Length: 118
Image (cartoon, rainbow, N blue to C red; front, side, top):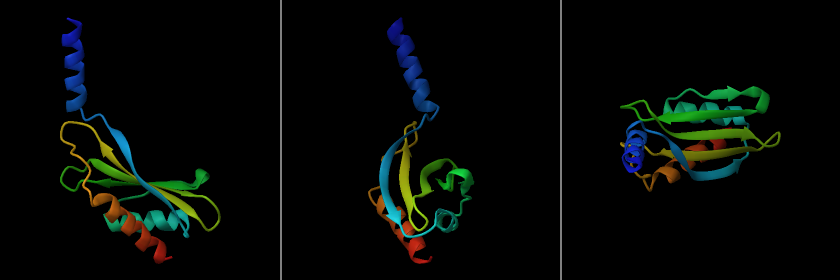
């Protein structure tokens, strides 16, 4: 009986798309957090969420067909001139696949491009 309940709960968790995340990369950039967030959001046609009291922003990158967030940039101001950018890919759920091998490289290239534009 317990095994059946556990199996049912596990199946429900998979179908409901519970999310975990796996770290993609993290780096410091010579640019302000708000400038990086706006640039990254424009690159991915997204809207940044700003948390000005903490001097940080999040840019969720959605799958164009489903609009589900697939990855996220987290940008925070470290010093007056340096910001830390962390990119992570969401995993889990029935329809979420493994990370595309080129995805971390592409996201890092976008962040590098935005930092150079400042």
